[in-house]
Amino acid sequence: MIISLIIGPLFAIVIITYYSERSAFAPVIFMKLETKNFYKTVGALVLPIALQNLINVAVTSADVVMLGRVGETVLSGSSLAGQVQFVLTLFLFGLTSGAAVLTAQYWGKKDMRTIEKVMGIAFRFSIIVSVIFLLAVQIFPAQVMSIFTPEQPVIDEGVKYLRIVSFSYLTCAVTHVYLNVMRSVERVVIATVTYSVSLIVNIIINGILIFGLLGFPQMGIVGAAIGTLVARIVELLIVVVYARTKSILNFKLRDLFVRDKLLFQDFIRYAIPVTLNELMWGTGCSVIAVVIGEAMLQFEEGEWVNLAVGAGFLEIVNNRVTMLVQTAEKPEDIDARHAQEQMEYAEEKLRQKQSIQEYYRTQASLSRAMNRLKVSKRKKW
Image 1 (cartoon, helix red, strand yellow):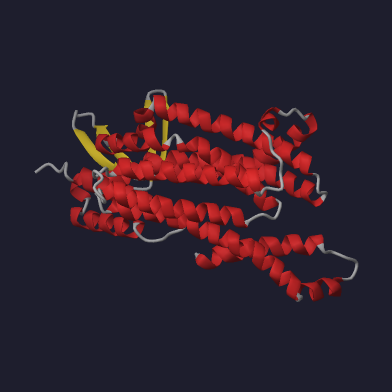
Image 2 (cartoon, helix red, strand yellow):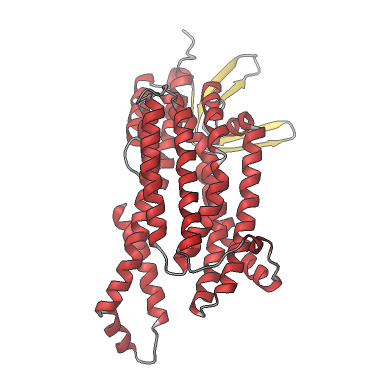
């Protein structure tokens, strides 16, 4: 995982540098690839980006480790509530990717004013999307949680988490766009510093509030939500201070409302495909948590049967229901001891450092194990 985090940015930057230095003589390119200046430039760009990826994984791992020590209900509640943030991040990534394509081009021309306009467009879209997510979670928190799980205790814990952490959606909209645009203009260190400070703040506040250290009350999942919110606010403050004192861009609030038809069309052309791609990939991760659950079937004789079902599809046509799932187990067919071991293994794995994809796969494994264990208790003796 660590190798992929480093090789990925390295590969991308080598390609960019290769094409930026293309000439009519191929041997000259390979000579440049061996120069000290080339490796110095690549190192200055790659290392901070790789470190940022590692920090993002560490932030997720820190929350999981701490809440895992409190209990499985709060662990599941925060993990499933995090699906909302996950989907929002996919939107923001798509928008900033579209912006980065444009800003990188205009950075080559040193057209700073156009870069500021592109940033304004990206800010406008990201803030609108974040406000929609915030309102949805604040008005319908239980309904949003019920999308991911039918378990009322998990929903209750997730609602506590969402009501607080959802305010960080607005700060993420600003910091995510700004820091990604800074990357496209060769200012990558600020993102590393910002996320490093955020990680430290998150760990400290989580430890104090989750476990009730230094005389504070033990707040559990609420403490984790407060820690995340404070960490995101700190990120925003760092970005604001940097933008006012060190930034090469002179972005102003009026740039949020800038109107440039051609620039807007270019932004849409680049941003929409990336956003749709990310959403389709992310939906696959989110749906796994939705479809894993319990089905109740009634035979013609009137007998009801409970089934633990896995991922699959459901079709309803002319009052006929067809369900195609990976697994469907009756309570008496489930080995409760094995399900308990699977749940404990998944919980332990969640406490370890993982990539985002690994994290959601482990989360799905935990959901399956918990569901099988719940259904196994419905055996008819």
